[in-house]
Amino acid sequence: MEHRVVIVGGGFAGLQLAKDLKCPNLSITIVDRRNHHLFQPLLYQVATTVLATSEIAWPIRAVFRGRKDVTTLLGEVVGVDVEKRLVSLKGGHAIPYDTLVLATGARHAYFGRDEWEPFAPGLKALEDATTIRRRLLLAFEKAELETDPQARAAMLTFSIIGAGPTGVEMAGIIAELAQRTLVEEFRNIDTTLARILLVEAGPRVLPVFHEALSQYAERSLASMGVEVRTGRPVTDCTEEGISIGDEFVPSRTVIWAAGVQASKAAVWVGAETDRAGRAIVQPDLTISEHPEIFVVGDTASVKTGEGMPVPGIAPAAKQQGKYVAQVIKARLKQRSAPLPFKYRHLGNLATIGPSSAVIDFGRLRLKGSIAWWIWGFAHIYFLIGTRSRMAVALSWLWAFTSGHHSARLITQKETLKDEV
Image (cartoon, rainbow, N blue to C red):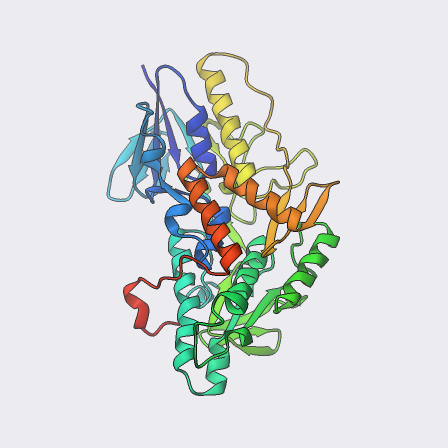
């Protein structure tokens, strides 16, 4: 009789697990509410017009078209019956499982201020990226038509909330867009006068990096015209702008890069959670009292050997997916279980601007152009398929040599519609 493995989520953890899990008498079902796998580390480059959506996303069905043991289903999971071992989908369908893997990722966290979301979209899905891209480009288009200086200044003020890698990378590319790419394309506005504001509640940008690299990143951003504000949180956000403490900054384009929270997967299976809603898992990444249910990736609360949380980054998710595949194979072959999951940190990487990046490998720290090249090669290496690697490399080469971004199209119906 076939052993049925159901994987909920086609992100890094789920995809890695399905790729590594090959056994006789085993069937795998991947369920995702989108039909594609997304390379999230480069999602901000879609949002800022550098890359097209097709260059960082691939149909899950295409990835596994040569695997007859893998079935891909487009559906939204709404619950799990742990007693009957059924995954319930929106619309009434149910999928039976013998082993369940929840790899449902994370979503934006507004720290109790969910009313800010319409004014400050986050960046987790392709739809988020195209929304932000549209707002960025429309800001310049509307400013070109505006005759009131104060209104124009507000339209040309771009605020990014959160100075982790995503926030820093977004700020750098928006600065490049304003300072280099768009300079000669408008007649009524000077795009170099655009104000890019990066706001961080903590004491410094890139807080997970070594302080020296953090200081370098802040200096690099300042040299690009980015205004960095640290040490004070955003206290309000409306369609007119943001408040930093008691100071109001008129800004018609706001981007949220400050935090995430886990999906509702832990609630589905009644697992204990941490403050971010992530399921607290056992050393083998299963949940308490249910060894047949694994939770991985951003949905799971996992500790390193030093007791620190495993970061919610792609390498960590891939390692967890690979580990769970080993555990399942050991069980099916009735072999002894692998040792508890141990996370290997490969380093932190962030790009700042053209030929500028920081890399923190622990004892080895790099910055500047050499770090930028390593960052680029690392990201191209992890892309799926030769075609995607070539497309991204060519897009980067074009942007680097010409200063132009290749994905500056506003295609949605709402192009001329009033937006927040």
